[in-house]
Length: 96
Image 1 (cartoon, rainbow, N blue to C red):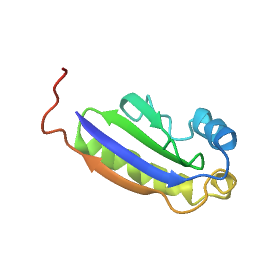
Image 2: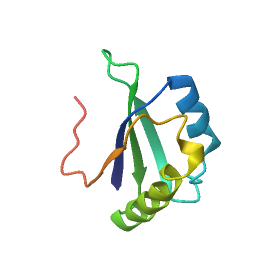
Image 3: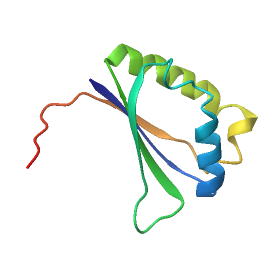
């Protein structure tokens, strides 16, 4: 399992969430198994998204598609700045 983590400033959560829900990257077809959306408690204009995929190559392919989407004029109203991304490979997970 690999995680594509995306962090970025947004103009407004409702506007951003509507764009996210339109799902222009077709998350399911792209191999996303689960996602988590988080917001810092002290910054309502910032989101962190973790997209869990089966492997690194699926995460890289999705990231390529997302870069194209983020450059489109349709993305401009939802984003406030350039998204920061990382592909993560879990090393250890423990439930306590």
